[in-house]
Amino acid sequence: VTAAEQSAPKSKLIVVSNRLPFVLKKDISGKLYRQASAGGLVTAVAPVVIKGKGQWVGWPGMHLPKDFDDLQIPESDPNDQTPTAGLKSEQVVTVNMSPDLFEDYYNGCCNGTHWPLFHSMPGRAIFSTDHWRAYVAANIMFADKTIEAIERCTKNGGPPPIVWIHDYHLMLCANYVREKAEEKNLNIQLAFFLHIPFPPWDIFRLFPWADEILQGMLACDMVGFHIRDYCINFVDCCQRSLGCRVDRKNLLVEHGGRSVRVRPLPIGIPFDRFVELAKSAKRIIKTKQKIILGVDRLDYTKGLVNRLKAFEILLEKHPEHRGTVSFLQISVPSRTDVAEYQQLKEEMDQLVGRINGRFSTAVWAPIRYIYGCVSQSELAAYYRDAAVALVTPLRDGMNLVAKEFVACQINEPPGVLIVSPFAGAGETMHEALVCNPYEISEAAEVIHRALTMPEDERSLRMSRLRRREMENDVNYWMRSFMKAMGSDIEQDEIGTTS
Ligand code: ADQ
Image (cartoon, rainbow, N blue to C red; front, side, top):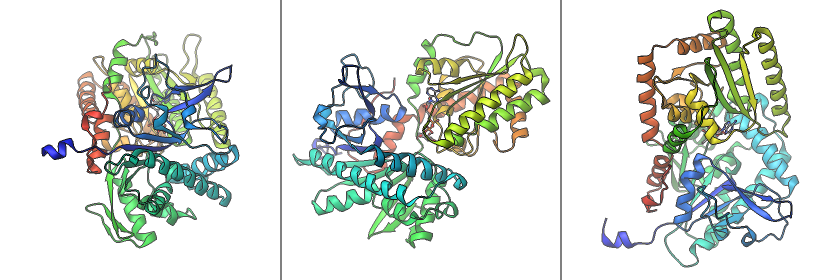
């Protein structure tokens, strides 16, 4: 690195995501305040935006008046210790849409169509022209606001900012951003990251506006996915649907006279933070029974019904576990205004009731079911003290729970991770026990194997799993992204996770 390069100004990062890294709320007097989000993504990305004087574009979690000015966003509370605390109101651009538009865009197209389709569950997808129109309109709104953010970042010159668009809510956004930026002669680098799987062509092409989605994503210079399989699916769709020239080996797609880089960038977690939480968290589970743990948003992709049925078969076929093992499922309410999710909630309630009714004794119940959100510290205590974690989605982009569990396994001898091959985590966490959630009897046998695994095998598997997640944590993911962008953003702007 030459002295000139060292002193060169750094690119600013503009993050565009459906939600801002905090939500705006009103207190009883009607005063706005911020409620911070604590996810891993925010932990890694927020420091780069804050220190690099970048911008964050997103929906603020509530509907605001039409004439709302971003400078009205309250600064964070002085006691706020979360990673977004230093994000100034002038670094935030809110996307403010009407409740009707939001309903059709978010609950309609994003969660009613893209979510099931991209998880290869087309039977659950609703295809509606009205929802699609709302999706287009919302993506244009996000693009307009992104242009505002670019203008804020470049008003004093400097190198082209990096615009990083996130997830299935905003797959068209890059296209409009590129168009508008070209009109205004704004120089930018554009990237996209998909947090959910990218499906095979045969599923993807069911979507009536599939080509528009591909074109939207191809407006970027770099498109990232969790694992190579999703990259290959995307490249395949570009070739078969749009007729693009592709290079499968180097994961390149030619489009609009440009070469788009496609990259596997498996996300990690703030590993050290979870270790610290596990060290300090109070013991919550005080029974002698071994705990089998499940932690998920209540979502049909997470395989919760199959998981409960597998546990029931375990108790049937291996009665020695009755009274000595307990299954703790913690499900955080999710998308509660969508009918599919309400039905799943009912199905879960009934199943838990039926299995508990069937096997409970006066002193033992097989399933403990928490329907609600728990704090990160409580979560760490459950992860630390569980004997087995069941991460068995039917399909999942990555799955952070699997990673959080291994980070918190600080006790010797450790527990056992069971993971589905249909999660990105199943592709990368090689020392976990693999369990196909569709094969329910076999899944019961895998749980039995985990419960009876010798201590030395558990230790060996867990130490390898932990080492990988420690090295490939969320900051490593952030650095990999910058490397993939050939970025000159300062590496030391990446926050520490502890
Ligand atoms: P999600 O589908 O939300 O994420 P996941 O990766 O498992 O799934 O992350 C869930 C997060 O919520 C975890 O950090 C977990 O700790 C937390 N959580 C779950 N239940 C909770 C509860 N009851 N109380 C408190 N916290 C709870 C999407 C994709 C994933 C991908 C991530 C990140 O669907 O495949 O891994 O984005 O890219």
